[in-house]
Length: 160
Figure 1 (tube, rainbow, N blue to C red):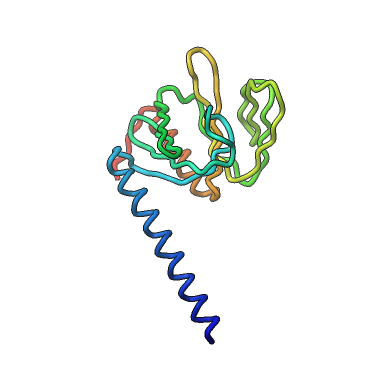
Figure 2: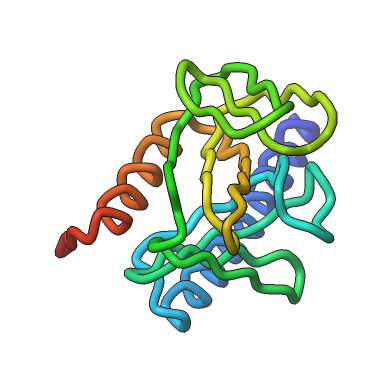
């Protein structure tokens, strides 16, 4: 009986911690004018951010803001070439950019396979194509975010 009580207290503490983290993220999203946000695992693409780092993605009307620790990276929708959600698939990274059928390849000079429920953003920097890969941990959420980016990329606006 005592073990059950300790387990319940631990679960309650974890729930409170999770609630507080979510509340802080929501406040940060409101401060930068984001319509949506998500916590994700960075899998590939941001220089200086290690693979498997926890990042926060904020989706405003004009851009995606990626936050890692105290650093912010901004990507305007006008620079995004394509966006894709991949369901629990493997992504092969090698060679040059190609999207479709759950496969993304980039100019990395090497070969890398990434697995998960992925949100993939192909974008243009200068005259070079680049890719960002994030594991959203939930395919349906990745689809929702990809749809949001796609509507902004095409210049459509949606009121909530």
